[in-house]
Image (cartoon, rainbow, N blue to C red):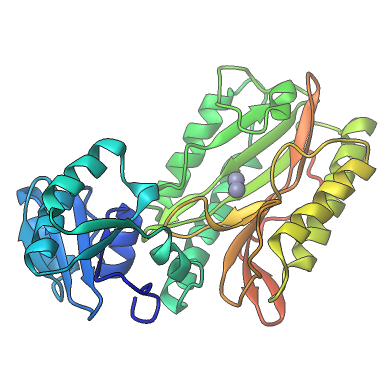
Length: 345
Ligand code: ZN
Ligand code: ZN
């Protein structure tokens, strides 16, 4: 964190679990981290996690507390820190009140997204974990989606994807799999139901594995049986927009411009974009940088982002194609390798 400490801050209280993990290695569900301007770090956690904290974050001093944030705020104040930064995006109003009380007479200062700014660029270990998560995701798609059968339900397919990913080495789902058949595929974030798979359905699935804390994110849309002309047309439109989006990924590219180009292309095809082009992935499934109209910071080498345009026709069906892409000096290296050609099962 050295070098990214804002002027006028004596210490930073880190409460977002993924940021605690990123800085210390500690993965328990109750932990906060205090970092001083000079680089001293103190982890707080409760009795359930003391052994785990010693194993995962042995290089960091650890104190035992149930209310981890207030305990560290009090400790920072006692150490003479006058201005203590906190993560406003990761503190509830209730916790903020407790922190203010515990830190008196020190002042709490909002210090938004300092650790997030470090997390956007991945190191070799993080890239390896992301690649492994994507590989498991590809393998699960091959095994489960390509052998989908008529009459099976969205929920059954979602469960089969989760089970296959665990068997292939995932520690968890990156998020609850989205599986959508027929008209349900027009709902961008559909929750799986008992609807059975029928001939002529689009089968859209958006899912990923979590591996060593890192998330994969992939969407494919296939057709059950021979594709109708309207399905082929819709698929081709999204396929082209997604391929263009992937090839525009480069060091120095502006997220807002990538998003605008995809939006424009969707409009030219006669439709309206219903979500952004993509997002960063890492210790969270959705993290900086966001490929949306507000994305003002240039892409840099070793960021990892998704490219996921979709077109959705209410009542009929929708197509989304999504890949997880590693930004490199040569452009984008796609980590999810499942074929993007139209598949008729
Ligand atoms: Zn996705
Ligand atoms: Zn996504």
